Length: 173
Ligand code: S3P
Image (tube, rainbow, N blue to C red):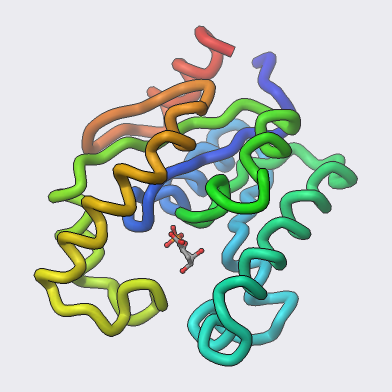
């Protein structure tokens, strides 16, 4: 298999980047790199604690530093980014230089319903009512999709398998 050394998964919160990323990594024998988990590990606290103590801007700087550090990481990696990662500090340009990007696309209704079950670990929506989450997802997705759509590949719909993603990568990259 002739695959690039780093493959990036991009998408809104709740699009399943980590779940699919782990499966793809296992299938192609790469390591899985979860940006949020790496940041939590470095900081020895959760994303929610980072947002609450030091604010979003501080978190966005941590994300950018982690992305830049991947330039010196020579492992074969499947990287799951946070939903906002490509949309701050010119990160998308850096990411595009590092490897192909796959956008996992879902409509806002599906994303909102998936997120309602997992609000607490996501500081951007933790204090919103269900109705507010729906509006928030619609508005933010509209804005962020301009960046997400710069990805090398876009995959739509539920039940996508790691096999299908790897096939697409091999055919299109
Ligand atoms: C965020 C998404 C989260 C996490 C943080 C901010 C965002 O990652 O990085 O809570 O701005 O969309 P997931 O997309 O993995 O939930």
